[in-house]
Length: 353
Image (cartoon, rainbow, N blue to C red; front, side, top):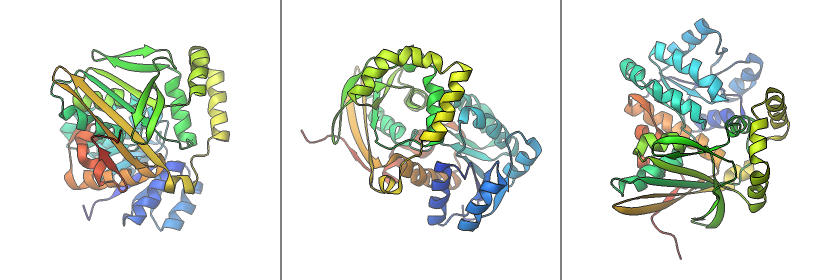
């Protein structure tokens, strides 16, 4: 691992910069990469790192850049656009790949490359950030306690403002409405329906099903055929989604409205400030159930964007050290207890009454 080289693509984005800073803090020297040399240069100079400017449609230049490293960490979204060409370059070069997507279509694309990844002896791991390391690890943990579980529920609560990249990726997913997995198949449901109360370790919150990455990753990790992934939301948002959810989702599939929504996200989405990232907390819950009984557990961890930076770089360390092979979920690649290696994280089997 000491001689391993890795590249951070999308280094100048909100999350990419946090990952670059965390990498340097932990003693790494990744190659910073992205489309714009003008944006890369100041960050590379500030952190004292090598940089390479390359677009994903520059196939020859991208191939050279990827072949020069052992692993690519892609932090550039929307990943439905960036992941396929970068994964193709990694497969051609025999270079491992990791990203921080939460987009269901990207997970499906990644897992479709399993045989190719195994043939090349590399790992392809999507979702190695807050989307979806903590929930995938928690799902693996509760599923292991219920052999033959048939139902899995996960929920998360975080109060961070989203970045531009996260917001644009979310808009793309919400354009398809919400989804759940039933009998192994993804099923669409109206956004804002099937809301429920979930008890987190710090209190009870209303949550609603969302097209979170767990619908793909937890299915791959556990094989449980019925999965619902929920996000905490206040009652006002729940009511608004019930009223506007269907029409709003349909509008997000119309080109002009989609472009307007993405433009607005670029103006309004700023991401959490430093104080929030430093002091904020995230809360998760998971429950597995089946004929053998049920198990549930809770998790408390870092603010979502800080978590992504810390866990993402830690995941790189594990992947370069352990060299897993195949298209893997985070828990498959890193193990259910990987989450406990992240600072200021604790997992609970019970919470006070």
